[in-house]
Image (cartoon, rainbow, N blue to C red):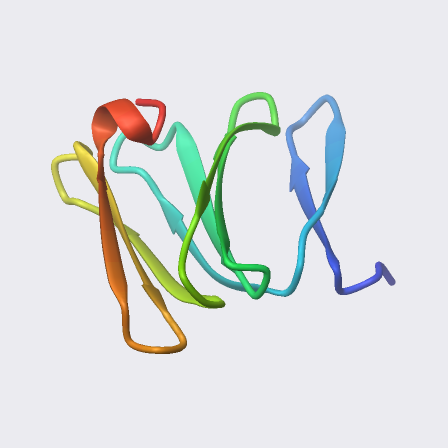
Length: 95
């Protein structure tokens, strides 16, 4: 059993471990290449699914409880515990 404060991003050949604070939400980009996680430490982290590596970290106002990619993949939206919503365009989310 793993410690709940870790997120494991695994591929068929390796695992990458990253210390994150309580992941509350995940989303996968429409092209299946990027995983977004929203966490209690007020961050949204973007992971390259094929390698399991963190490729970008974004900050929010309060603990993040929801993340979603736009259907066409050109942006990412995140909502926090205070009801704030932030939207990032593709150049800011590493796509």
